[in-house]
Length: 471
Image (cartoon, rainbow, N blue to C red; front, side, top):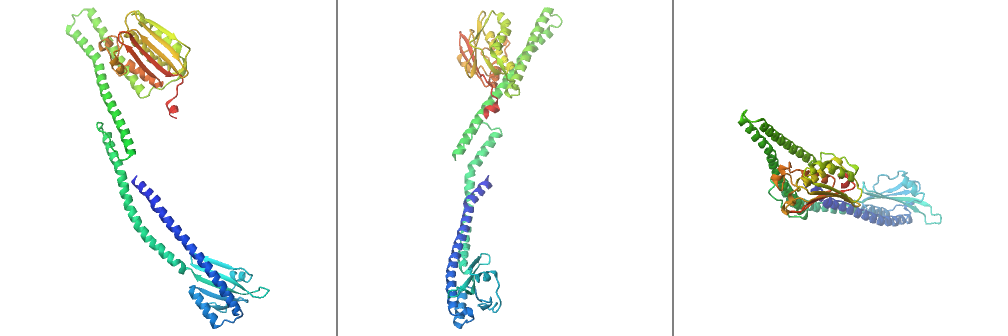
């Protein structure tokens, strides 16, 4: 991240300055060269006219013209050549081509009346080829003037200034480099502290909090991490309590079986057969209870890890509720409890039939177990355009108000002695809530001591998988 920030600062800070400096220098240089070319073009035209009027293109190059040509060539730091009508070089300020025939394409074009100028940026030179015409009516080209000039006299001050600017820019870049390093260190220091505190939490130190308030972003991250830590602490406490409860619940049947077995062993062979049968029946009941606890724990574990795939299908909920009550009727009849079913309208919904049947069965069984003899349990079914509702009411003893918020906790029992006597494991309601949650529904409980308890389940009519709902 440090390197990325450094590169960002370089690209957004230094690189634009370099580009701007190079473009500005190039533009200024081109403007100066164009200005110089315009000035030289005028001077060349004046010079060609002056030379024509003095008869130089007919070979009359006197001392005055020689001096003028030398002076002009020196001022341009260049070279001037005069070409006559026969393409002979009759004057060369460098004396290299004097008397030679000059057949360059630019010269030939000049004798056709074309003017030529060219700037060679790499060689730093200007070249002009000026056609010279006669003053009579024929406008015949009588010669050509070839001028080469060195542009370094124009470019050198700009290039020198450009190099000087680089010296200042280098000093500026060095300062910016140091400032960037300081800013990066200062900017990332809170993040480094944040990472350090998160690392402590990842090592198992859940008791602390993250408190990095330098920026709004770090405040938001700190708050989010603290919420995660709080939830992790709550989960850890719940886990520890759950493990303790599991150990206790599993140990209780084993202790009972151990006491019964020890009692039989202490009697030797003198215990009557009826007593043996009674004790063995009790041991068998404790084994069944242990098995039921283990099965419920396994079911909860699979539900928690979403390992149980949801087999969703369009189902007639009215028929399922009636079937659940029919199956539980024998249990209710043993205590003369009346099971009532009230359906307000036909309900077709997307549900996992076995899972939802288990959840509703647990709720109805609880209503029967913790009811009074000769009481009633009522299951009602209704729906709207989005959800269907299952309400299970009984006329039992009710649940204390302070216990309502705990009844969905694992192994929680309002009356532990009574729960064990009825064969409860304390896991029926947690299993029911987990199954309903898998259907994206919710469950609420309402109760009043001495008047009974009501559970209200709400489930969407149409099941939407998690991945689809996230989208």
